Length: 294
Image (cartoon, rainbow, N blue to C red):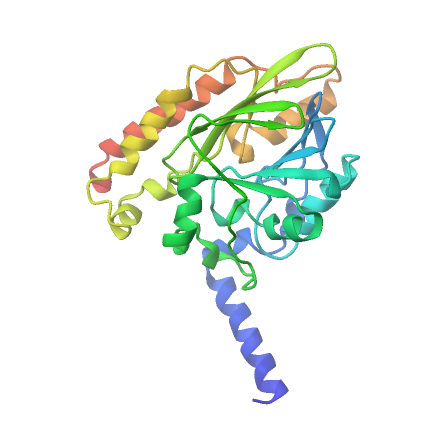
């Protein structure tokens, strides 16, 4: 094959990718860069305008929640955000993943290989990688060199793990994927302690009739499992609802509010957690009542 024909084949692959409506999530990712900011005390936002990532400064190393999207530029944005927040990426000792989908695992292999970061993933999603890797949706990425991984720790229901003095209590919140995690931990500004709640996956894309039939869930059991997961944690006391996608908490508008109103913090909201989980619960009941989804 000549260099010219190889180039033309390359351009043809590009064109095919751009025809896919999902391509908007994988190209020009730098346009989604968000300047990192302090959500509260030792909790920082380092994600983009779509996919969230958070850093907790434990005082004995950084705990990172989620690794950004796969595809060109996403890992560079995350590294830059950590730098811009005033931290060193090599201090990320632990990386906890909300779940195993492609848009949350982008920098996993980079952190592990570059810094020796320890990787944590819900046990059911670790099993998904071994038995049904296609369900990670990694084939949707435009970067064909992205690859799945084996986590260092497979999170189980009820695990309590200490990260540099910060105790995190984990629950499995199966639904969006089998291995979605929900967790709770404290952060502080040096004066007050606030409890953070994290729910790692709300999307209904994996609850649609077409998806469930494709994976063999003809009884649509995944929907009931999703509802059960919400019921398990909805009444937890949460001061700060930490999202895994920005639309969970209207993050960008809340950040703008903080800029315009110094000293006020809309992320500290004792009702936000329960209200959003209840909304997702009710929305799923509506989907389940839709004749087209049955």
